Image 1 (cartoon, rainbow, N blue to C red):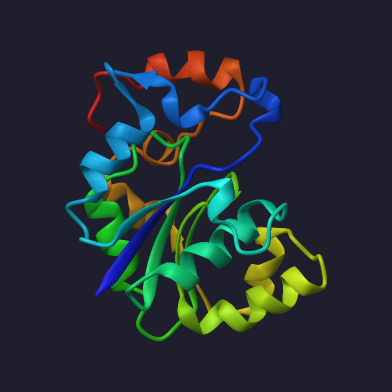
Image 2 (image 1 turned 60 degrees about the vertical axis):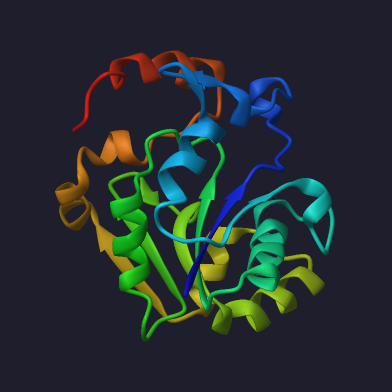
Amino acid sequence: MHSVAILAGGDARRFGGRDKSALVVEGRTILERQIAELSAVTGDLRVIRRDDDLVPGCGPLGGLHAALSAALGDAVFLVACDMPYVTAPLASYLLSLAGDVDVVVPRTERGYHPLCAVYRRACLPVVVRRLAERRLKLLELLNEVRLREVTADDLGRFGNCDRLLANVNTPAEYAGLEAFQGHKN
């Protein structure tokens, strides 16, 4: 069994503290879109909020820790709550690649996308150690685990990478989503 965890506990400092999961894209909130789409992947879908963190105040690494600790499955597709176009086929594909590695992460010309990636329980000890050491950068975790990179070419079969991996960190990025609305690819 696989699990899905949507991280919805961030501060959204670049968005004025606004709850990004509640932003409306094509008539539904991003969180509603994600739940509708990703519930097709598993019956174990969790929304991880700040009060779910077992080690509070540790950002996405703390959210990953909470997700891995609560998940029923060995592999967890972790996604940020500000990514409206993530699809079930993309999540399923990334989960299918997790058999012999700890993390499966997309890598495009913009770099790694650790908040749209698969993490297996095998990386939990590294996460716990990094939390204890207050080394909280999720990207740095990737240097300490068995990693499988998924290229933009591989992701292309699921649609336009820029659309699939689009996220909303600022009001300008939210406004920029209009370019993707109504397009499937």
